[in-house]
Amino acid sequence: MAKNIVIEPITRIEGHGKITIVVDDDGSVSDARFHVTQFRGFEKFCEGRPFYEMPSLTQRICGICPIIHSIASATACDSILGVRIPDTALKLRRLLNCGQLIQSHALSFFHLSAPDLVLGLDSDPAKRNILGLLEAHPDLAMDGINLRKIGQEIIQAVAGKRIHPTWVVPGGVSSPLTEETRKFILALLPQALEITRKTLTWFKASLENHREEIRTFANFPTLFMALVNKEGNLEHIDGTLRLIDYKGNVVVENVDPAHYQLYIGEAPEPWSYLKSPFYKPLGYPEGIYRVGPAARLNVCGGCGTPLADQEWAEFRELDRGPVLSSFHNHYARLIEILYAIETIESLLNEPYILNARVRVFAQPNYNEGVGVVEAPRGTLFHHYRVDDKGLIRWANFIVATGNNNLAMSRGVLQVAKRFINGDTISEGALNRVEAVVRAFDPCLSCSTHALGRLPLRIELVARDGTVLHEIA
Image (tube, rainbow, N blue to C red):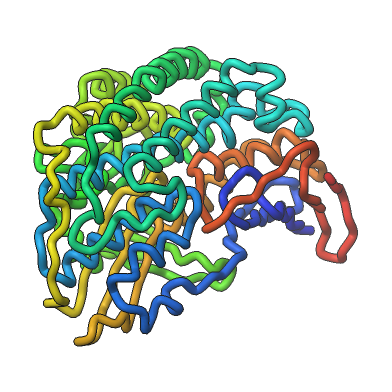
């Protein structure tokens, strides 16, 4: 008699979700799904607001990555204005985003996933958290805390606030960089670089300890999508879209982000509030693709900075073609932190970074605008339509987590098939089912934290309602 296992909530992710696993009569897993159980309706309550409010309003989608929402929104608004923002403003947006990359990736790697990676996926759940990590490996935990702090300090120095600043605006940014701020940020970089390189050395040496997770954490063929720059290198805020297949062949490239709807569709499902985007030419669900740190390193032809390029080349040696296992998102996050540190230093040493011309002004000249950028978790789409007064009449957001929705569900199924069998389920197996989701670092709009004990109850229930096994 078939049984369902329900994991709710998933811990150590941003937001609220659950996992359903179907176990057949013989104890084998036949299906699994990742459900997003919260609904906020941001697209609807943006309607009627002036377009110029959108960069500040849409930041409230998330407290972890508000910066990239403001940049995506402002980019869409730039299109509505019909302007090209000043070069210095573009560089300052890139500088601010690099600060966000550091703090967000540090949060994911050290705070959310390092307890699994360091203490072990089968370790005591009462200790398997940031406080347990701090007790067992204080140097590593403090490195994570300090690295995230550096990213936040960069954001605050540039934009005035760590969370939800109003500095990114339609037409550019609201104020130029000062020499004092430039020197302050430069002084932060040596420590950030030291922590990142040390962590990369440790993590690469630890990969042999995670062979089974690498083999099963969403390790299957899909398409990969990301922005690239004119040279085909890693790009986060000003590029064109490229999709490749699992062999590394380019499926489509040089796609103007404004034309994303020609290639990307969105399919709703009755069991989740999160839609499932797919590559239209292949249909749903065959058009499954992945975005995010590992996808970006698969799609690009290099990072464009010396140290990150060395690490990128080593990363690409993990597989004969694109790196398929989403476990390696952890690895890719460290490489992107390294890229962000190098990029910040390069930007701060450019001759015109202190230029006072950082914003252009105009009235709305077009009724539609699209902004596509790379959030820490993957490709982010903001699409607006306005009336002649510049009021939002329609908005569509495709967040990185949405782009990965199909891949996360398939990854949950792959892990469940490997680690769950029979009428009982071990805590370590349960944790691995959650950990494959954490590898994608989904952001479901707000954070869930758990310390001291597992804050969920899982029941293995027969069709007649009999509880066969329970973990609490």
